[in-house]
Image (cartoon, rainbow, N blue to C red):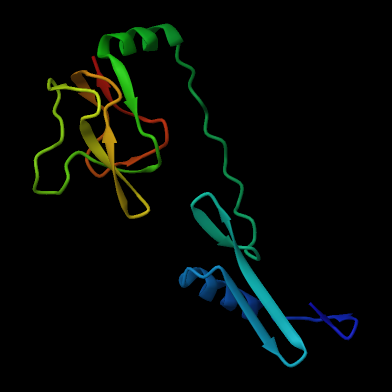
Length: 158
């Protein structure tokens, strides 16, 4: 932002208000010009979240202690449950096509490869998740309406 070879000064409150308008209205860019003055704010998209480029950095988070569990019992437990069916995306897990409908699958039910076993909603899109293999549902690891991460185990199929 330059004015006749000199750096222009903008009121920080004004810039913060513009950034709020940008964020509140899901805009990607705001440009304002008034005579010889001009300002442009842009949202930078990182993954699925967007943040105004002038917003200060978030406060550092304190690291959470991690517990280390032996891998052998986990492998034995997984072998007893069957093959894991994981979420292909981040979203919200739904066990049925609508709140008043029956679940796609239940524990103990036998399914075939390609059967729809649940829905993961991502960005207002309902994505039907199909089984990658045939077998019997031994455990459903996620509750209806719960957020899921990419690669999270949704259920085990034996």
